[in-house]
Amino acid sequence: MRVVIIWREESDYGREVREWLHDFERQTGKEIESVNPDEPEGISIGKTYDVVEYPTILAFRDNGELLQMWRGRELPRMSEVSYYLMDN
Figure 1 (cartoon, rainbow, N blue to C red):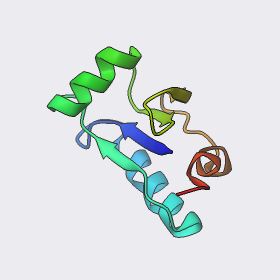
Figure 2 (figure 1 turned 90 degrees about the vertical axis):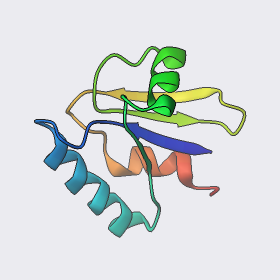
Figure 3 (figure 1 turned 90 degrees about the horizontal axis):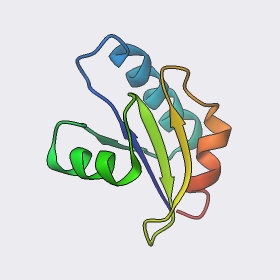
Figure 4 (figure 1 turned 180 degrees about the vertical axis):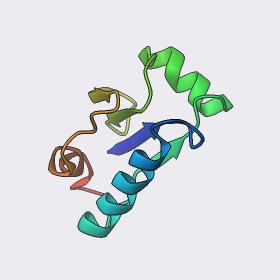
């Protein structure tokens, strides 16, 4: 499975996301792929999955099927997200 977070580094929520990602990696040993919504991949994902709020975390199957989406500044519990990375 694949987990991606779409967010802007230079934003009012940037520090919160950086800290959450750092803590997530430290606690789980897993990394979440960061995508900028203004770059080609971010634009494509945003259009495909109707991402209109940042930050947004998406969990996909390997075939691209969306399994879960978390939107907005209230970031999910790390255990919720790490579930989607268990087989990686």
